[in-house]
Each structure stands twice: as structure tokens, then as C-alpha cells.
Length: 68
Image (tube, rainbow, N blue to C red; front, side):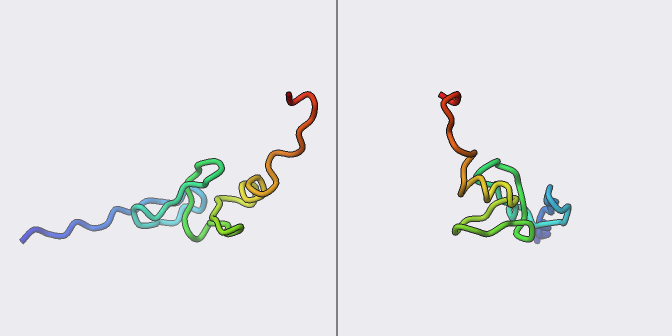
């Protein structure tokens, strides 16, 4: 009988804790990887940091005439 292959273990780039393969998520704003322990939950979504959460809701600020 073939031996079971153990689950691969990855490390969260944010906190360094080991997580099972496939348990890291990509932030919808910056595409950084993070684990469930590091996740910032808000607006029905998960983000890697408070900064990305704020960017999702507030954007990058008011548009000015020189932006065009």
C-alpha cells in the first residue's frame, strides 16, 4: 500500500505562521498573500491590511483637475 503524502505546509508572508497548502488568500486590492489569522474582515470581504480595506471603501482620494 502506498504511503499517504503529508500535506505541504506554507508560511504566511504576513505573520510567518505555518498554514496548510491552499489556505493562503490573495488580497483583492494588492494581491498580497495572507492567512485567516491576518485577514481584515470588512464590507463582506477579506483584506490583507487595514490600508487595503480603506482603499476599497474610500479609493485613492478625490480627483483633482491635474489628474485629467
